[in-house]
Image 1 (cartoon, rainbow, N blue to C red):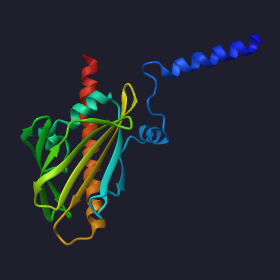
Image 2: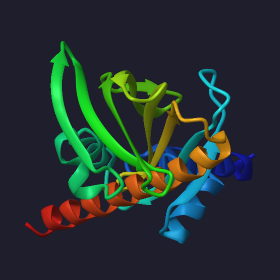
Image 3: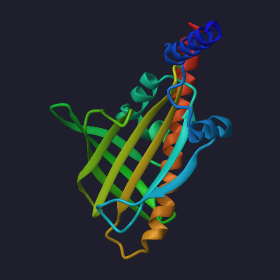
Image 4: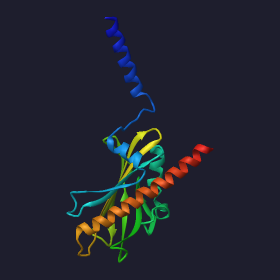
Length: 205
């Protein structure tokens, strides 16, 4: 009986430790892989809006969720830390929504697409902080962006960007998706570098 009570107490202590502040919020194999890789992973996803798949990328960022959120909402400076975005500027606000003008080269620079994307405020979906934007005007059929921010632990975060671009040009969807995956890769890596630099500087103060 004494042995059983001791075992219960040990299990309860372990349970409290797992729930304590600072415990890992995401111990998935994906998060572990990204932390070890220290580089972006590209992928693609199907959407209900188009037969063309969205190009996407994910990366580990050695900084808290709040700092990552600050970076991805720094719309007016996108072109400074995301090399694939030629131009980016805030062109309007509608309540808690933000309209952002984006210009992105595609087809190896042969064409440039532009769109005004309306970003909604963050919402929590399945434990992730999600920031979505949809095109309200532009020279393409559709352009959607979805940032997904997931806590790994107090000082580590996973960032995903899923970007859908449907041009008016008659080009294969697979070709567009490949280039958009590259753009998403550049976006998450640029966001990682900016966030980690700022977080490291803040910790030194």
